[in-house]
Length: 325
Ligand SMILES: [Zn+2]
Image (cartoon, rainbow, N blue to C red):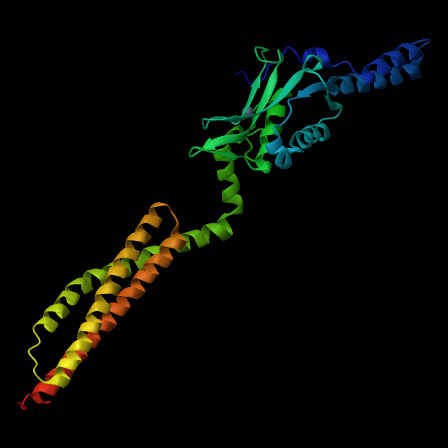
């Protein structure tokens, strides 16, 4: 791959402007006088300058796959218009057959994450013509993805820039800046400009909120596990013979199973949240951890209820001061 030097292009600069200039020069030289000499000089300079810039490129454009047409139908015409407006006398002309063309424009997809545009001066390809190639589709995580239409336009402008023998620019805002060739770099520079004030900060928010609740929920779970076991022992060892006291202990068992279930739920949602963190789904992981923390609150409430029922049972059996028999 060779970025710019094309012998094929130098032969394409014959324009109407050129011939008008030549005939005007010829006529005005017969017969010359001092005034006309100045005029001739002016016309000569004008014609030389415009002839230097005036250039027509004949492009043959490979038919775009139907699935891409909606998104990218104006990419090439927008890109060529961009350069025509920027460069006096420059013109792109679309031709019907490859052999009429100076250049072929190809659309492609690729399987690696290298450059998204290419330029070849040689003619060792299907069309036997120099070509630029624009990548519109690419494989990411084994799925075919497409570039944004905005990027398609930038990379097409960039490749046409090379076709016009422009070198890379050191200005990051210039379309000839080299990182335009890599979609990831392009995305990064555009996300930094656009997304940072809004989306990016809320993304960070979800991540830190998620982390906060993950820590809160896991601290609670660790703290509650032995307490649930203690409640179990307490209820198992309840020595009451009094019917009302036994009824309280029965309420205690109901509360115990509810506590155990909520502790399970807290642990499960905690695990689910952890899996979402691995996928960087922080908003979703946040709601899991929050839910997990809410389950631990139920566990705490049920444990408090068990203590209350046990105290009531004790009082019913032995009296408030433990004096009843
Ligand atoms: Zn380049």
